[in-house]
Image (cartoon, rainbow, N blue to C red; front, side, top):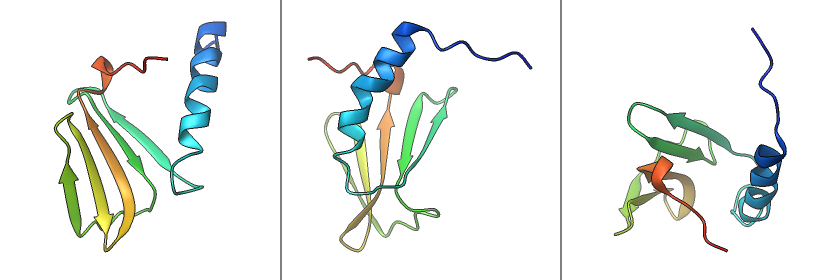
Length: 84
């Protein structure tokens, strides 16, 4: 399998995301993307075993185990863009 080349644009995007990821309450996380469903999953616990969830109007789902945030689900992920 050929290596995926890390272009300057990709590296720049990783740096932009870094400061935001460091603000999340977990220091270890897993990120999965379902291309067919266009859904991005960010898990702070494996397994999540969420007991509650809250859907925001903007299509982001926050998943909780008790009062602890254990995951974030972002619907229509490919259409989301961070504006500086």
